[in-house]
Each structure stands twice: as C-alpha cells, then as structure tokens.
Length: 362
Image 1 (cartoon, helix red, strand yellow):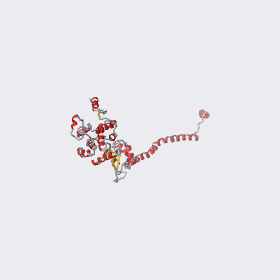
Image 2: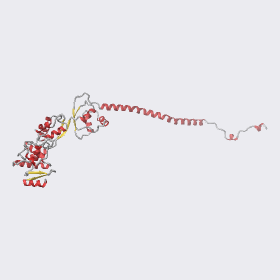
Image 3: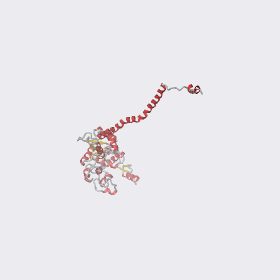
Image 4: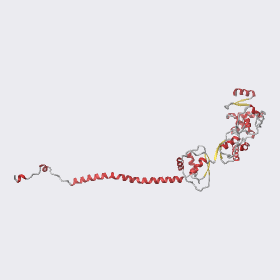
C-alpha cells in the first residue's frame, strides 16, 4: 500500500459543514439569559422580608395606640375638679334618655367625656339603669361614682296626688314613696287633716329628708298659687270637695254644684253620700261603702243628719271642681243619682228622683 493511498482524508460532512466557533455575541446572549433568570428569581426570595419590614411599624404602633386609648379612657373617668366642695342639683325628668343625661352631665362640667361614660356603661352593662329624680352631684366625683348616684342615690322623689284624695291618703302615699321615714302614718294624720282641702292635687318633687311642715307648706303654697285668680271662699272650698267626690264625669261637676247650692238656698239637707264615707272611714278603707244604717252616724260630717255644710272639706279638690262651684250651671234641679258607670240623672222633685232610683238602680 502506498503512503498516498494510506493518507487519511477529512470527512466530507466536516468539509461541507465546517464547525462554527461560538461568537462573542452568542456568549453575551447566554450570559444575558443567565443573568435575567437570576434577576427575576431574586424578588421572590426577598418579598417576605419586605412585607415583614412593612408590617413592623404597624405592629409597633397598635400597642401604643391601645395604651393611649386606655390612658384616655381612665383619665376621662376621673373627677373634673378634684377636691371641689361645690354641689349641683341635677334633675332627671321622667323619660329622658341615657344619651341626653350624659350630654347634660358633660355640659354642666360634671363629667369629662360623654363618650368615655358611654363606654363605661356598656362595659358594666348599666345602660338604662339611670333613674328619674333630683340628685346632688359634684365635679369632685369620679364618673363611676356619679353613675352610682344616678342609679340609687336620688335626692328627691316624685309624688303624684290625685284629685279627691283625703289627707290620710296623702300621708300614706308620702310614706310609701320614702318620705316621712321612721314614723307610722297615724302620727301625721291629724297634722295633715288640719289642711284638708288645701293640699293641692298635683305632681311634686320632694326631697327625701323633707319634714311634714315642709311638705304641707309646699302643698298649701301650690294651692294658693293655683287658686289666686279664683280666691274661693271657705264655704265654696267645702262644696268643691263634695263635688270632687260626687261627680264622675267633667260635665257633671257644674250640675252637681248647682244642685247642692240649690239645696242650701232652701235650707234642705245636702244628703251627700261622700260625707258619710268621710265620717265612717278608717285606715283599712278611706272611702267605704255605705248603707241606709249609716245615715244615722253621729258625726258633724253626716249631711243626712245635720243640715248645712259639713265643718270642713272632705277631700282635696282640683281646679275643675272649684271652678264648678264658683260658676255652677243655671238649673233648678234638687236631686241627682249616679249609676255605677258614673252616668248621672237629675230631678226636680222627690217623686221624679224616686222614679230614677227605680229605673236606674234596681
């Protein structure tokens, strides 16, 4: 074999497709792709750290805010003026809402913050526990202490005296509502009875430590004020007390007043059942039922037995009954009777009256 024959030849495929060297551009592209992958991957590894960094100020601020709120809340419940000896009478009318009461307390400088006290009431479950009445409060009291006063420590109490009550009923109501304490009702009956007819029916706000003289003065002064324009004579006040007990409806007051005045004019006995009740009464029943036998009761208040007016009022009349006596209806009736439902029937003669009795009562 000749040397020439043994000479190796380059493969054709290498000759037709010469191998290409990597160009600088290709290397740069590779590096770019590699670096891009690294750049896009980087944020995913740093994101939790960034979020933590962002949350850190919030986590630090929240406890501070809570502490500040707690400090504000506690300071807001402290007295407005520690050491003050000045007291104010704070009156809560019936029906006033808790929000209105708290706003008034702040306006009168008795508490520092309405909002703080609302929160206190909510947390202590005391909403709706404030009572109507009159209270003696001071700016030296802490807000919770003021709330306790408004819940339990009412200085005054409301008393309503209806028209037609006799003095003993008024005494019993005063004791029932917490006045005239540490004494039995009977101790005050005679004292109040002296002013029968002038213990004016109305709604009053009394201090719990009021004594009997103060209460009587308040009632009689109110009577004087309310009747100043009317100035009823003593006799008319007695008649008004009878009308108050006898009339069941407003329209009947001037009619019954006329009947009683007509009887007095002719010297006829008044024969008013309510006067028998007044004479027969006892602490067990101040207005007892009466029978025919009771017409013989020996009492100056028995207008069946004794002619003319009783010696004094039998109850405490309202303005309407007083006006009815001062301006009675112009009628000639001498008799009247009332059905159980209050319907009243009038008559000119005894015969007509007896007919009404048979017709309406039997």
